[in-house]
Structures are given as structure tokens and as C-alpha cells.
Amino acid sequence: MTGTPGGNLAAGVLARVGELVAGLSAAEVAALAQGRMRLAVVPVAPAGDPTARPVGPTPVPPTAPVPPTPSGVDLDAAAATLDAMAQRRDGTAYLTPWPLRDLRALAARLGLRGVAGLRKAELVERLVDRTIGFRAASAAVRAR
Image 1 (tube, rainbow, N blue to C red):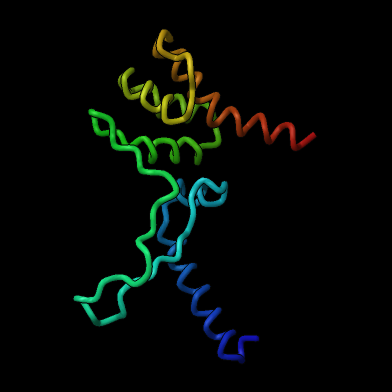
Image 2 (cartoon, rainbow, N blue to C red):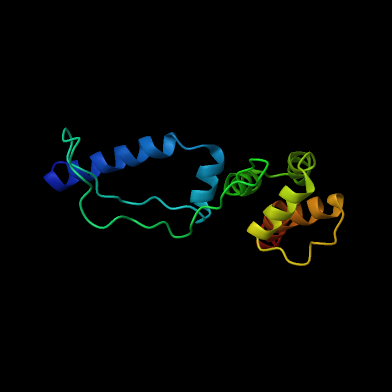
């Protein structure tokens, strides 16, 4: 198939996708593998024409990005970082220095409810359970 024009085109596309994936962070690759992130085909202006506008409709992201917290924490990046971690202790060490309001914002981003009255240590534990702990429990069940 690589001898055909379509095969050469497909090989070129796969090479470009490989370059794109190679430039992603470990957290982004993990999110992509878990289906929480997508690669999108977006029409762009022809090469060499800086005045041309993109062709076709403007793509709309599946979900609007969450703005950073007042202290500057990017909640989407934080969620991806937690998803890339394999050990509960790593998640605990990552979240423990955070201010309580940022932990609550992350909990809201992850869909945790009933966390308003929790102490900081309890909230960190719930967040770790929701992310790393959930994956660890799922893997244990699948291993049976």
C-alpha cells in the first residue's frame, strides 16, 4: 500500500501525527490514551499565505477550558498531572502544598461533591482517591 499515492499520503499523515505526539507531555499522552484528550483535524490557511484565513468552520473545543484559579493553578493541567501519576503518595505530595481554595476548585473540576466542610488533609485524600485511587482499584479489579 505504501507504493500507492494514497499510501504515501497516509505515511506522511502518520509521520506528522507521530511528531505531534512526541511533542506532548507525559500527562497529555496519558490523557490522550485514556480518552480524556483528543487530537483534532483543523483546517488551516494554505502554506505561504499569511493573509489567508482558515478554511471551513472554526473548531469548537468539546469543553471550554477551565480558567486558572486566583493563585494561578491550571486545573486542567493539574487533573492531567494527577491522572499521569501511578502512586497515591505522589498525588498526596503533589496536592499537600496547595491552598485549600485551590483544592476545592480542583474538587469541583473533578466533580467531587460534599467537600466544603472537609479539612485540607481529608480533601487531599478524597482527591487522590478520586483520581489515582480510582485507577488503582479499577486495575486491581481487572487483574482478577
